[in-house]
Image 1 (cartoon, rainbow, N blue to C red):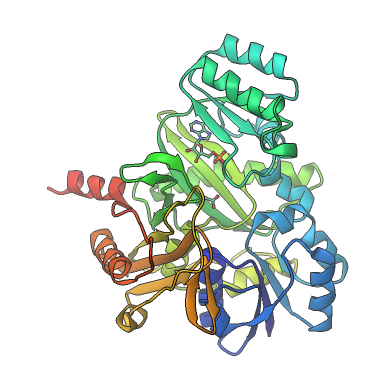
Image 2: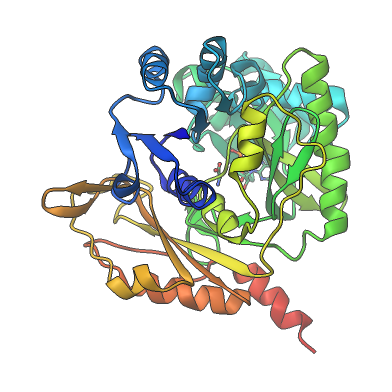
Length: 430
Ligand code: AMP
Ligand code: GLY
């Protein structure tokens, strides 16, 4: 079997790691692989969004399965183009990927389907947005509708700040095209939860719930990042709550997409707020989350390849089940000095052998490059270190031990990943 992984971050390294276990004899390819993926794949020097070149390459190399990590190639129509050539792709069509690529589309779809989400309005005109913000009152959230690499969201405690955010997007063109349309929505209160669902468009296989840590600083302070760490599972997300998420959120969303002509096949990621009134959708993504994937996949006991290949080939997930290890996983992101602002690259990275060999520790590469001089940094998020153990506190201990032992100039990381869950553990202890 020949499998191409599109993308080269920590999420894609984790996908590769799991798929290699499921198919040890398969031949793997990856677009511009990072230093951790490189030893296990044949590199393909084509950008993920260069869909035509990638399609030609995939046909020439008789690839059997394409697994897409990032949202951009999906939104740009990779799946549509590849399916047209008979190539099985795990990932939705561009029409279905609008669930992430257009927040306005996602919100209107949820409203039509009766899926719980914050009250909202969509604007292209600044004066109209301003009037709504004034009338609605703070706190409010202003979002660029299009893809803005997680940076297009402003949570405002004052009306003035919300108006300024809308002005920056609609008048000054911050975020370019992505900000020409904005969603203004009410602020939700509660804990956030990431729910991954593998879906053939109708049937849903829920993955273990996880929690991301988006802020740069300890205690969830400071600016937003792509994610500084994650853990799974989350005890707040009881089996009953997950059933409710499936029934009230995932299934109605998939039904609406299908009935409107854009069935979603792939990984539907629901970013939820667990409010006093129940789970509400903050956002949908059309792909696996990063860094949650690096915490969730190490806990998956059963095959990932089987459901992914089934969906990619247009098959049904009916009757299929995922099995999970009764363990906890914590992923700590090692970032480069300056991230999420400007950061330096090309710094030498050393990972002690014992870290690689410890069966309870996994090192997923994100922004690294393997050069003739060895491993160097090549991104803001450099590595994602996952500890796996019988308890969350032991998983935390393992990930931090490894995070400490790995070196590169300018390395920094959060030492409090999983703090909410640990606090719950403390409270629940007799
Ligand atoms: P998004 O890209 O839509 O997930 O938003 C990024 C982050 O902004 C989320 O992870 C939340 O922390 C925050 N956020 C987004 N929408 C809301 C909301 N309606 N209420 C409170 N926080 C929000
Ligand atoms: N962890 C957030 C995301 O992948 O969008």
